[in-house]
Length: 266
Length: 224
Length: 54
Image (cartoon, rainbow over all chains, first blue to last red; front, side, top):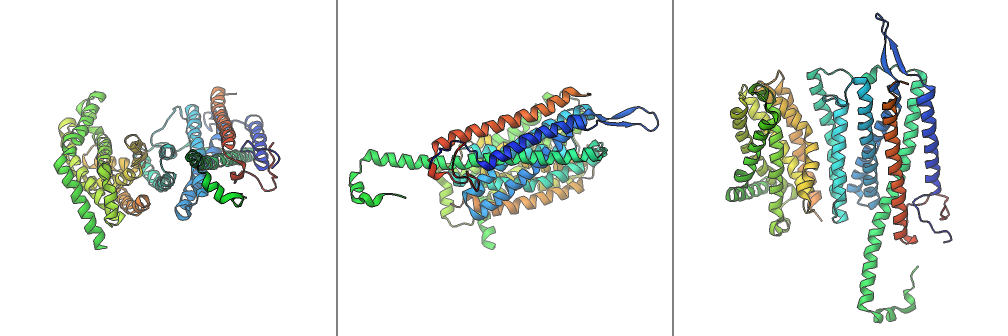
């Protein structure tokens, strides 16, 4: 082999990364320059109301939310795949998807809170279905990641993590339903997201956001997968090296002599 | 099928017998739960009327925190002196081990709940307006917590960090139980105008799913 | 622009966090590829890659 690869990059991932960066730049252009703020005029009093420029946060917040769900669904699917197939590929994918998903989920909560302050006049809103469900989802996968980081037999860890991921995903509808009923009881206001005046350009920018953050997410997922794969390979390699060292320590020339030239590997 | 339940009964009886002898629930977990109620009283610094309004929520938070101790205790029984290896070698189905242990935890939680109801009546001035709803929802939530807790106790076991890992794994999953049980108790204690029986449905569903899932998953977890 | 501070905070935090996470991944990847001999690195190339770095 001529060149020595020393990064997790490849031709494909570099193309993906560059596209993502360009996409983010274009999205910023659309979000901040080309689209208008959300301004509506009250029919009777004539005064202006609406989200004004805060709506520009939604081009960030909503795509990241979609990506969060996509990542967690991938994690659940990969967890099922692992429980059925028991190969490391599924396990590494599940872990990577969970970590990337949790990064996005945390950002969704933060950006949502930042959006909510000027629009709802509060940083947090107990009883909002989406908020509660996303918060519990975040906590569930924080637990998943904590479990992953405990040092234990990798096979056991993979199996336990897979069960945790599945239970987490199954729990979500129950959480959603219970908060929904709770919300109805306390009669909280509906989210103003649904009242948003979706013009053509707003819709296009939102779609652009989905594509751009999809690229960003894919790039992160790809590299996180490769990192995870390397971690497993490095661990196995470490074990193999330790065994080889031990053999060398024990000084086993007899075996080498007996094996001789026939021992040349591929 | 009968074997599964018979074995489960054996396991449950074993765990409860150990509890009867060691009295961990009575001496440690129950006082802890009562202590949580007392701490809320101090922290909220509120009059009786306010405490009565919050009593259902405070009750279930206390139960959830105490259940962490009960589950950890239940799981640690199997790891003392390598008992879990003996259990595996005994040829019992993993699902019966799960059902037995969950049943034992459930019994302990039920006792705890009775104690805490007395606690909130005395400390917060709660009044029981619908005893049937109180009992049924308490049982349904108890099954949910016991089953989910036993599953997660197994998931977090043998890692050396069980005490700190179990809470962050288990408590978020129980969010629907907390919401549902609190609403049911709101109705049963007359603390809020809510249809508690509707919430009971959620608790029952959760309990059933948790029990079935736990029985199935336990096998996948303790096999090698 | 109204609510500018919120916009800067929201977009800023998101892009910074994603950027830091991305760089962290690249760094982890760099460190790990050093630890693993070349023959064992599967799943790291795209179809059409000839194994060259850079």
